Image 1 (cartoon, one colour):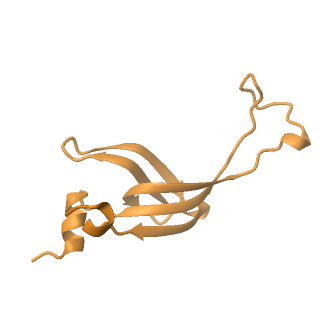
Image 2 (image 1 turned 45 degrees about the vertical axis):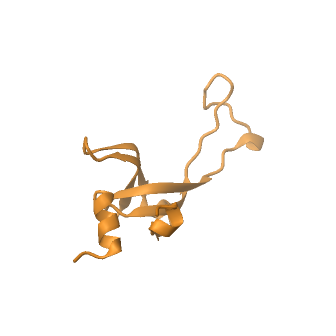
Length: 103
């Protein structure tokens, strides 16, 4: 008989839910949307990103996280590929009946 974790994973299509803390590159654009003639006071800095969703691909070089899943269509929404070199930490989240208010 499957345990609660196995049942919950099956309900999510078998994909774990993760929280990813990672850093993304950034560029500085002027008011017209150009990336030119940037002075030293306006240099862009990398951005820290918190991403949560379904871990749908786990490769040695990168992961792919989807923010939404349509199980009937077998499709994903809000999908992003994150290089492992940009990842600070991946936390696997556990969803239980207690923390989502299901009785």
